[in-house]
Length: 236
Image 1 (cartoon, rainbow, N blue to C red):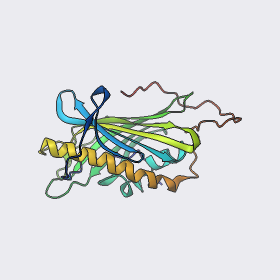
Image 2: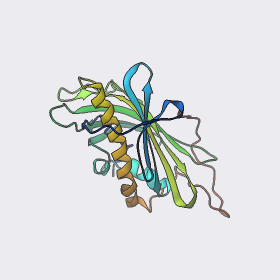
Image 3: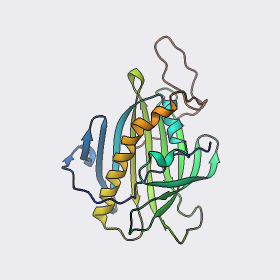
């Protein structure tokens, strides 16, 4: 089975009704809240497009969540508007360059993107971060797609008590081509919301997943060897 970090269909465009919003600390504006799922947005410096952050909790191990994030064959079953993805280059477990397609609704053209995913796990807290960096020039553009010019962010997996994991997904993206700003901003919110909603059921497929590169938090009385990968990444 091929593996990859998922490409979020951030740029899929659906026009929906505005959700009442509330301004919070650090400029974050609450745009959606339901049980175990919150979506916020805030201004992004130098752009009219918003930065989006989604937070949810899943009943799963860190290994299960990582197995889901790395399962290419299942990617389009839970990632909103995923049109497929291909690994272009891998450097061990911790790094992958991935080409992905976003299935935009008619009449807009589909988008494609090339990003690099960098995995790290903190040796003490066991928190996992996956930095997302855009590499639009990594491969040649294709006539049938609009190449996404700007995209970046991170995943953060925070282990909690009683077998829960808090999942944070924060991204900023410019879909390229011509799309009204307000439509692109709405689409970003919907994409994060639906992807994280789908994640909560999708992760149940991976209950027995294990990797030597993913270390769980030790339960009382248990011992855990130091994780192989440390972390210095500090998402804002």
